[in-house]
Length: 134
Length: 131
Image (cartoon, rainbow over the protein chains, first blue to last red):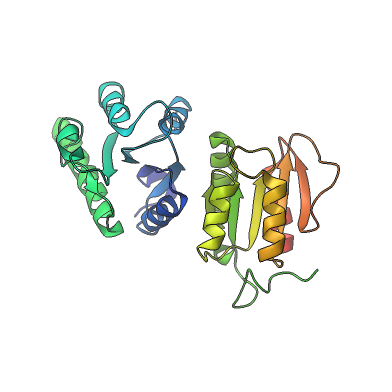
């Protein structure tokens, strides 16, 4: 991947430190810049600070007032330049998430490689849409 | 006190990329800024949102060379209690503490204390001297 300034930026939202650290480190090894957070408020802080963000990879069940579903809805409505990928261990989450992200949530426990592949897919889709628009 | 034996099982880390800093801070932006700064300086950084998360990280067997922790945090332990816990289980692991006010007594394994808001360049300088 190109220089540091061009690295896609992924925000990982996960309240379990060991799960968060593992996926964040894996994605850094894949060449992404990774911001770690534990709740939706952390994401709004990053967005409000004007920090560039490409993909949010978030657990559905987040601590705080906003869960992953509500957060994904707000991202889609307000920050359409940001893609969201949700993950959950809860059965039935796929139905609830259908209108929020195209492929449905990644079922936990996930393989880090599958997360990276999903991120690659949404980034490629975004690039291709941008090319077509030009 | 000698240092390094437990936290660096395979000997002294000789490049910054091999040095892992565990940041323990419950204020997101403060943690983010510190993590960005240390990663940008070449360190591997693990981020813990409070002392309980730091305990989970250390107990999982993650290699950590220095702990940089806030003192006032939510959760079952503050930074001073975390430093005591570390002193018992990882006596060679150095701890750097930070807080808005300097406590009257600092734990013996606390190598350095910074009053918040602290200069990350100064903290990094301190880390470099420890590892």
